[in-house]
Image (tube, rainbow, N blue to C red):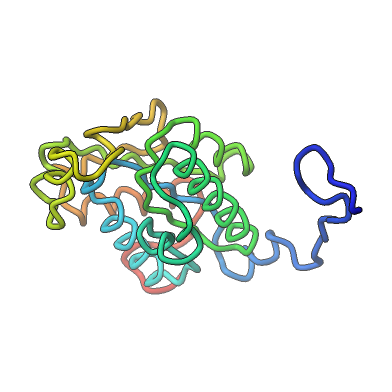
Length: 214
């Protein structure tokens, strides 16, 4: 029988080191690769902001991909529910995918509630210092409920959706995020500009956000 080591990986599974490295891919792309991790309550504007930032980065010539919470649950994580354990596994899988994408030289953007600090911290620990940029979409639950076109908050308050973040399950706000966006009151365009400027200041991107190329 095949030997299994303590971390549940097969003893015969060996990491293969490619000759095309992350650094070479980044040079080819003309920018560094990072994880932009958008977190916040349902309705806080995570997906809208992540996709708007991706649109601007794409226009600047950057290689990008958005991992959207609902989209991922249609495929990769379709077997997971919303229990504490499933939420943890959901974030673990996404973290591993994002790690692969930054090795590919891509700017990986995520839009997940990711309500638990430890789950977000576990993704941060997967990558090198500076590779994980936590973007807290800070929006009051009142505004989130007003935006809720699907009626999920109302259903959760009626007890029809168990373990709904912000109602019957907790949301642990980031304590030291790299960026805090007031998505309840700040125009989308302003939020996008702030994030793009931050990436430029960090030398992750090299181009002007008003240009179409690096």
